Length: 475
Image (cartoon, rainbow, N blue to C red):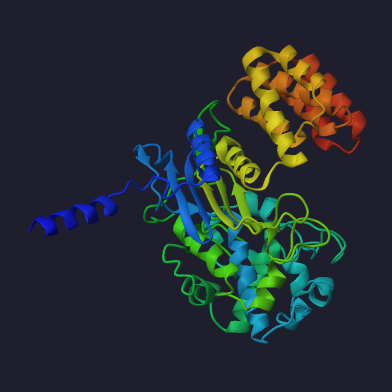
């Protein structure tokens, strides 16, 4: 009996291990865990594995702020554009089976496609690599100003792009567009003779044992799902639910829900050739000679870093699966708040810790240091940091922080941030446009007009500056 009791104690001890505990020691994971614990306000889940073994899995923040329900490691999060990974794998599975070719034009599957140029010249390869030139329905007035509950099927989205002008000629330029992957989803349905949902469930989710992943209707109940929160555009310094800001159902372009465990199982199955054979797996994870996007795959870090995967983001959504091929780490990162509320900090710190620093990472963290100095110690201290350093600032991160201050109602702080932006980027019309908005929100009409005029001088086609100058002069 005593031996049985000892055995039971051992079993219970192991089975009751806290879910938020590092599973085994790894200096990189320990460093990352300490950093994540120091992030204020981060809401999301993180998983880190090495050699296909999970080392770290932890939940932060709240899935539901109203009821104070905390995230747990099994919480479902919106994965945004990670869905493009599934669509790309599905297309390559059909290519592997000889049922389509990447050189096939869309007219082969849709002979009545309205736009003749697209019908004859846009190939599956151009859709996969975002070089089709098709219009961007996701940012069109017809989509943005419509009730999203009317777009629950792939066919319901077709009028938003089929009859619209091309953005560019096929293969003329790269432009990341959801339109490309919605059309790939339609091709999957046409070739497989089954709904997209059924195809990916049978050929990807089932194979990888992803039991908690799907393109759910977001305006209906989703078991153990995190709500998404963005900084409000209505009330300063408040969080706003995003249910009215995007599609109500996931699609081949993204917007579904998944968990840490399911995305880890997908990444593991992919890299171990369980979803595609070695030839097609190698094709999908091959780094392109130019740019950062391949066949449904994103490539981070410096050229040749061996880091690949896919990310996604929208209002109140951030998601990413990454494989560090040279170091053999897998990282899953999810958040239910805006990307700049801890997600980007976590992403870049993890990358820096595992694979080393790059100029891009140095720029990101130096910009963060400058912004914090400006907010905590004043703009003069921030300007001195800039003058004493040879590291370039990140304009996009400065701009994002300035707009965060506007949304928080901290207009004077926004003015200082944009003042740093125009100091560092004096030829950026966008920086002066943003600077003008901060002055306008603070009630400084003359200064706002002056900034908008500088923006217009740098870019005479800036219609926003023209409109704002007219409004301010008439007020």
